[in-house]
Length: 337
Image (cartoon, rainbow, N blue to C red):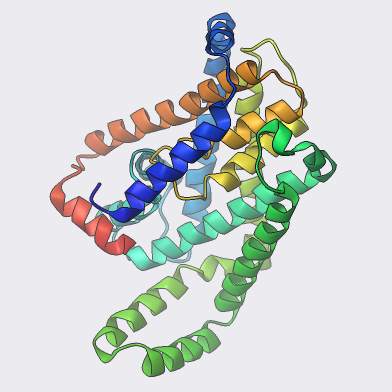
């Protein structure tokens, strides 16, 4: 809490919450929560955890060239990482799971971080695909629906950013020797002497984490797996929707899923408070859902996404004999910087 990034995230969350809740009638909101059939959350949580298992399989697949680790062993570490993302700022859970993987399996942190970044790039590509499938619907997302700015421009710039990152990583993976020469040239001429050796070692280990991208078949496998993961998460959106007396198409929920997850890349308070909620309410409002109903649904969905994985991750953290000690915290912060 002493870091300025934390307080910046809090301010961003407050701004997005104000955008989401302005004009909301609390009586109507409370009525929407009271009339919901919360049994629909159970199948939603079930398909979400299937998606988490697929995430663990994808990570196991990406780490295959470095070390063969079963999905069963990867699943607890994956849930711990997502728990960390939910309760610590700046997505510290990504670094946390890399640190824990090193402790348990001896995989270098820099190599596993490379695979985690690859995951995030492919996730971003799928999210943008969800948005572009519904491109004609984006015209509905105006300031009247509570969404500020032109989401079409955001989608275009986001596409350029994610695909540029994907191309860079693919080139680095396919031409590792060229990448090393370029990296060494840069390090020798730009980086201060005292950091050169450490940065060179990091670069070599990081490139080893990209080894899975050297095969076109592997690239297609990771993309297909990422697509399955996010379709399963959209299915959770669909199940939770049935708890409330409104209905939009599955494609509308894909659009909502894509937009809210792209928005959660914006720095915010832990748990993506506000950055998840405001865009989600805006999408539903654009489809004609009453603000109170859209707010109730988005809040319940947010809680259903946050609580189960956070509790399971915390349970695995203790069950695996790993303590969130000062040493682990310091190691995570050090790797994050």
